[in-house]
Image (cartoon, rainbow, N blue to C red):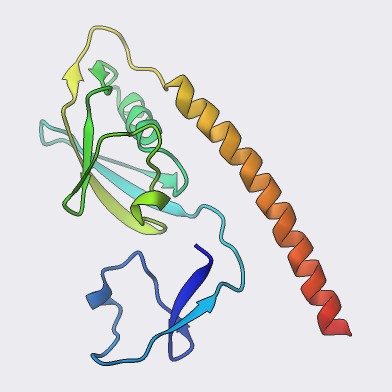
Length: 164
């Protein structure tokens, strides 16, 4: 999170498959510290339900999978599902703990992603956004605010050093 891969002074987007970066074989890559820290960027998330239906929406990369799943199902009037036993599959990896897995932790920081859902069960009780997700978002907002303050201080110190 603190470093970038650089090829010929161009930062490599690590959210893409490496073969699509346009880097020729036997190239030299540099590891450099990030010049600026990025906030959670927007990601277009596609969700493929077990019945084959596809849903999509835009989310920040620091949002949990259970929030994405609940939100997208509620927005599309598919509220009669139980997500406690759901599994998310992305790039041949399966994720069970939806309440603590974020898009960032999966390596998705921008662009778009297709998530395949399995294990959704129909339920009589309408779906609601889990309390743990709301708490997670609240603590993330606090972290974001403190991180933004640190970045501002760092930028101010860099500007002062450039003046001297």
